[in-house]
Amino acid sequence: MVKPREVSAPGRSRAPSPQRVAAFATGLSAESRASAMLLAKGYRILARRFRTPHGEIDIVARKRNLIAFVEVKARETLDDAAYAVTPQQQARISNAAQGWLMTHPEHADFDMRFDVILIAPKHLPRHLLAAFDAAS
Image (cartoon, rainbow, N blue to C red; front, side, top):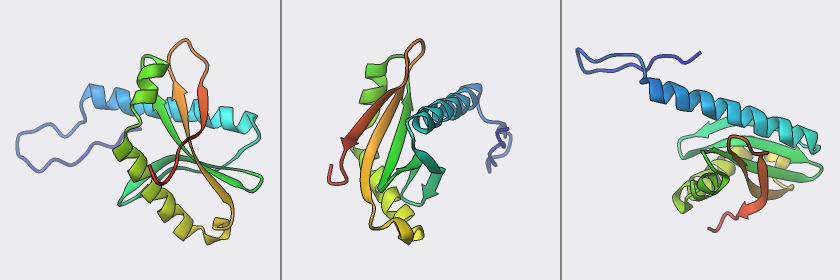
């Protein structure tokens, strides 16, 4: 359930817009599909929607000695989803990954990778391995 956001201006609606609620639901659904795909490929999900002041990671997954920081993008087409991962967003994800590693030092010696999973209606999810690196 989506919790309404507090609004300080008097006379304004406190409920989020229907578009915002729909986008939130679409994001949750896409992340669930992506998590299921990763589980089927032998990954273990360590975290979902990990937030820091500098960014958010949709999924943190582990497979053997690899930690994958996974961004999930849902759009009308797979191409639109791929183009939605901007360099600025890559930097935020990289910063959030550093935050995750600081709170989980037991994984600091693991190999790390930044993946993207693209979701579009009437298509199978597409998993892009090493879609970008921390220096991007």
